[in-house]
Length: 105
Image (cartoon, rainbow, N blue to C red):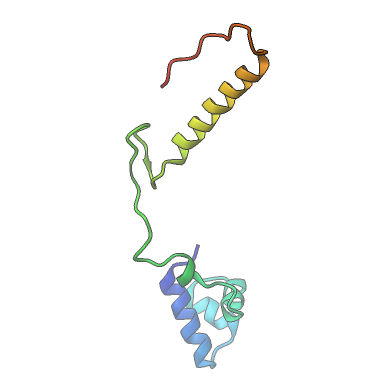
């Protein structure tokens, strides 16, 4: 992913109009296709990833891993637990004894 400074530099050089896309790519260190996309306004990175609002990773209280909150690992584990519980519930008709539940992690 391109840095915001690179995109701004490419846009400045494109607005100047003296250099070709190839020359801008060589000067800024990005690909010619990226320069072309920026020239056609297909890369509005300022709107997608403003540098002030980019969340920083934190230590997850459940799994202990470094992640941008909410932790996707914990969410995936919770989804798997719910799916397994639903499959167990669906496999036993009502009125019969259900298998013992696993203790919550």
